[in-house]
Amino acid sequence: MTDNKKKPEWVPENASNGFTTEIVKGIDQNNASGSARKFVKKKGRTTEEYAQGIRNGNRTILAQAITLVESNAKRHEEQAQAVINEILPYTGNSIRIGITGVPGAGKSTFIESFGSYLCEQGHRVAVLAVDPSSSVTGGSILGDKTRMETLARNKNAFIRPSPSGGTLGGVNRKTRETILLCEAAGFDVILVETIGVGQSEVVVRSMVDFFLLLVLTGAGDELQGMKKGVMELADAILINKADGDNRQRAKIARAEYNRILHYLQPATKGWSSKAYTASALYHEGMEEMWKIILRFVETTKESGAFTERRNAQTKDWIHAMIKDYLETSFFSHPSIKTKLPTLENKVVQGELNVTTAVKELINLFEA
Ligand code: GDP
Image (cartoon, rainbow, N blue to C red; front, side, top):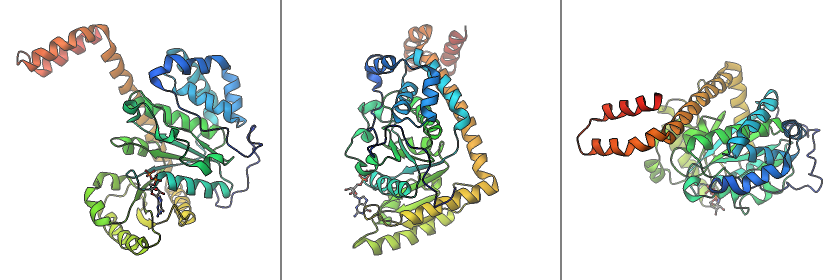
């Protein structure tokens, strides 16, 4: 991939007005058997139609295929997997970039600015989000159309709110499969944003090539509050809001972060993570960031670390899905549902030890 990529020949079917169709809402899993099912059913597309539509870059069909993938309904699962199988040969040709940072660090402003810059360069950018907390709130911040307004209108961009509801494992699978669908539709840069707190950083790290941590100045305070673990995941730290009076402070913070990064394990083999400054609001530092990412891709492809990571991620995905599947089957098993509360009580009362209780439950499950 080069920096000055020519405009792709591909033109989205319905992009004649220069706008993305719309920011398509994810499925509300609380209502997965209702509106979402109707939505998919009404279209009644064949697997071939989905696959062809995606390959032709038809945004409406891409959005519908994502809805299919996000559906928790059993009968959609089969077709969703068939569609993925069809498009699989056309996936993998993108740079997958994860973006994290505390709320207010400027993630959405950065994505808007960086995404628009990339579109100007002729790239096609898909923006996705991982939001494990959305199962609690039942909503998604990305669904708020006031975010990333400019990017949302760009015909070379596609913004998809995070799937809401379901388990972390479910959100994980849906986002990974959505990445594949977007790649098959010709998006060559995928930006995956973490929303909410908790495990989303680790989940996003496990599905991207490059992981960017956005931070603010005032490194002293922030560094104390920041988990070392998150810094260890980052391929670059970007000190945002380096504008106005903040410029000088941002430089000091950069030196401080670089000093710490020097002592941390590298996030990616053969790559030393560094800190940089930018102003997402004033569109400064976007080109520099992109050059760093391109250098990262070049370096890691040359060393083999790029492919190694992708392969490891695929294996992790298999393991994660097995765990998720087993957990769901276990806790929804009728005998377990009946027996679990009784055994829990016995353990709490000191009448039974944990290992024996667990063994009894596993035996029941396997019977
Ligand atoms: P998020 O919660 O991480 O997505 O953060 P937002 O992108 O919503 O930004 C939070 C606030 O910081 C908003 O009021 C932005 O306008 C502001 N902001 C974001 N980037 C910059 C920047 O580069 N400079 C300045 N001065 N403000 C910024």
